[in-house]
Length: 199
Image 1 (spheres, rainbow, N blue to C red):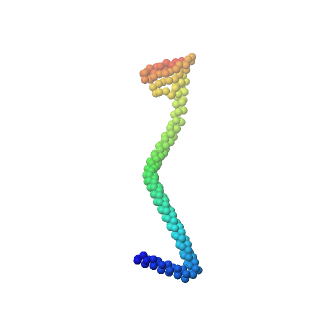
Image 2: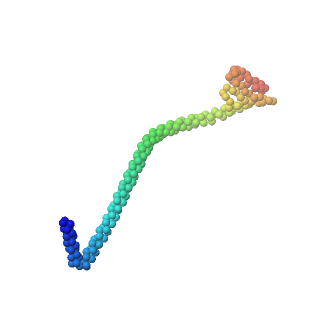
Image 3: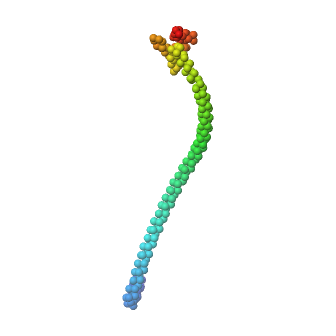
């Protein structure tokens, strides 16, 4: 019974569809189909545009994220450079202070050297004056001694050594005496023994 009702409903629905199709105009169906196709095409175009927009937004977000990472990395690098520069500045300041104190020390040393140089110039001028008076007379005295004794002395010897050559009439005799091993009297006697008594 329920089966026959279903079949009857189906038959009625079919009749309705047939009568609808028979009553419908083919032109109107074509227009509906074209409108439906246009709507579908518009939907697909919109979907394509939305997909492209979402893709572009995703790429823009990725680029912005990478840009932020790059900026953060650059910021960290700049902060490290700044820290390095600050450290160098501190070291340079400390070094500058040391250099200033060293410079002051060197200036004091230079001033002291200038004073010493001035004193040396004064002493040099005094020695020059004495030398112009004493050396000629010393040269004269040594020449007189040589003429009398005929002994030519070597002056570049240790203080305790007397060294030279006596030029006698026939023979040149070397002199080499250690004053530490001889008494002053013995030294004097030996030297006078070279001097000729013939005037």
